[in-house]
Length: 125
Image 1: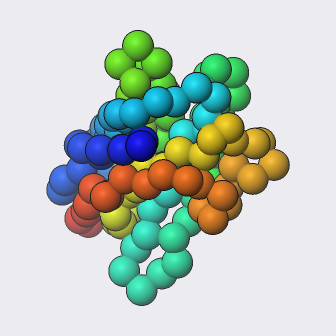
Image 2 (image 1 turned 30 degrees about the vertical axis):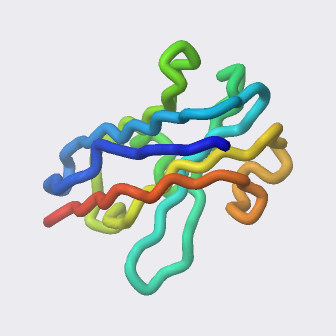
């Protein structure tokens, strides 16, 4: 059973930075790990994703150039460095894993098998 635990959320001012972490437990071999977010009253949206190989990173247009995703397989962890935060980035951020994962479905939450409980990110103006 794979379990995911996010951390690092909190309150930041617009233009500031936060770094989210996601630690996985359980057996994982080939997978795609992603970050999604959901703002109040809005649908969940894709933020970023990366396969376990780290060979490619996918970003939503809204965060490209501001957010950077990385993984550390030795620590079974994924990270989301969020810079130049905007008020519109306020949301609950979720870590998710799809096994084995595919670049064709990377942006669609319904294909992900495992989800964390989420961490709140609030950006003030």
